[in-house]
Picture 1: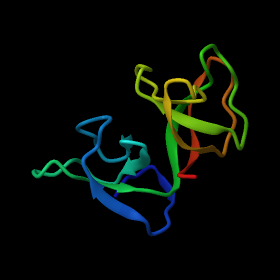
Picture 2: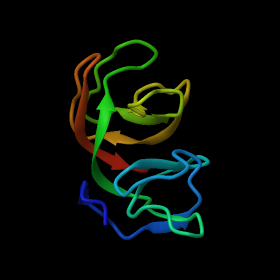
Picture 3: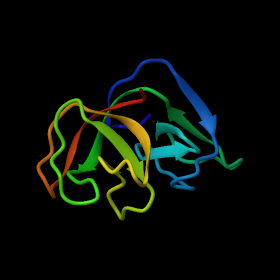
Picture 4: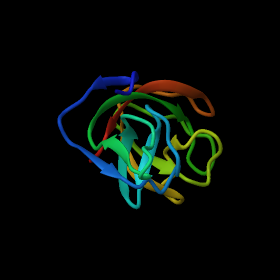
Length: 118
């Protein structure tokens, strides 16, 4: 199980992840428009079991299209165009991922609690 899990409900599913295509346990992932966190690495069949809800400690960057702080309760997105920090407030490039449960300063990248899903 992902070591960065803080609170997990019971909803999980084995899927083929669209980003990243070969996730490791604890990675934020998306399957099309479905957000989640990998609970284990990808298996031999190409499937990854992901948590579809819960609270996880993830790396979040305080930015939209420019640097912008993240406040508690802000909607966060998985931005496939961002490297390497995929979770931020940039809705123009991102898939809706969840909510910030902690603040992140403008331009800062920090590990914070993120509530996955919506």
